[in-house]
Length: 139
Length: 189
Image (cartoon, rainbow over the protein chains, first blue to last red):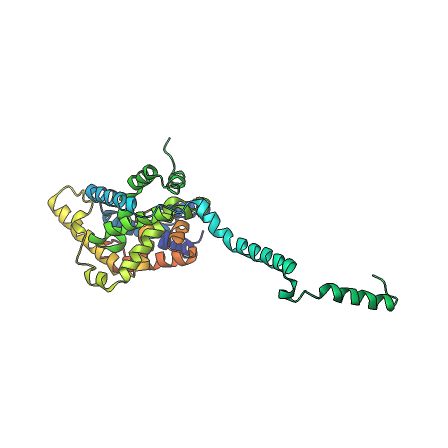
């Protein structure tokens, strides 16, 4: 590993090599052991980590208790979560609607062919067959 | 054996209040810490975390354990709510007034040490507050929540590269702001 790569990783992940990408940790440790400049880079990154660690905010126990109580009170009154069953129905409804429309179209064609321009379809087919016969063609 | 948060979410999706309570008790302190570090203020953090858990309850059926861990999903909800808060002008005017310094974890043994630690902590919090909100959120996720860059990216709906870019810029800005509190700063840039 080159020092420039080592520095780039320290700038991104900080001074704890265990948080660097697994594949680069061994090479980084070797460089930190061999190269004083790498050690200086690591030290600087660790100083910033330490400053952040010292600034960790404690969460008061009463704040946690308040959040739990208030949230439970709210969820008793808000709608229950949508179940996977509802979700499945929601994902299938467009396809269902399309199928229903197709079925309605077929029923209409059968019962009321004149509504969709098929009333004279049998006569047209007979005329076409007669013309083809007269022409000597075969299906 | 403790039931995983992902398994609990399956029960929450069936409106199981007991499972939801376990999730709340398990994650609320961590989410409060996330909100406090991200918002830099005390008052609104409880509202944000409360709202986040209500959304968990309402949207439990949408959670897909094959796509993310529960904590990553929860991080995303809390971070989004925090960034929404930070965009509001009301928060901008309050930011910095609700200093959380008095609640810092402080284990310095003597009075002078405590005073110095307090000053240093105040400087760190000021530096954190001065970061742009998305940089701050990325740093809080990675450093204070120990999220990986991959999980942090998911939580912020970013590519991993974009998350890493935020993190690098955040650390660089903090290093500049906190230089007086760091030793051996010369010759390494």
